[in-house]
Image 1: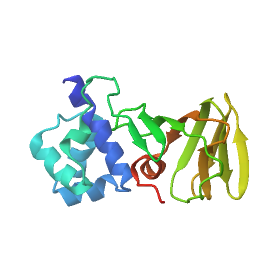
Image 2: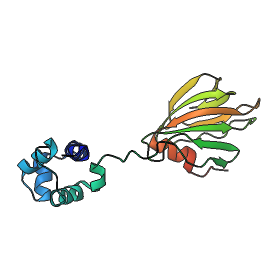
Image 3: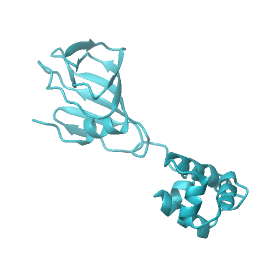
Image 4: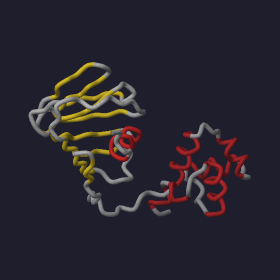
Length: 186
């Protein structure tokens, strides 16, 4: 059996468990025996289109989700975005489970208004100093320092008035959508 096919069983099991289904439940919904599904998941039965189609339909996934990703080009070739004085350079592939960016913040006199949203954020100051307003408290984060926080706390990030700052930011998926894709409020 090819390397790709040997990964179908464990990925099928993981998808079933992620949805909180037992072998009996998924097998019944898919019109197959529990024994057949168990043998598919353990790699003792070779997967076929006829067996996988009803399973993927019940799990709400594509057959491609059961196969390993093609090696492809690992280089990140996403466009740098400029918005509201920020320069946002993506450092990860768009399909990565966690997103990383190098963000350049322009110098500003006062911190922007804080926002709240789902997610989590980690940051590292590459150059300059940033002002992290977090839950009503202002923190100055210096070059070489890191911070992490739950984005459900009111927060804003900006450079200080002394000059621009470059930051490496890592976001969970929800935080990434808010910070890099959502339009800024005036």
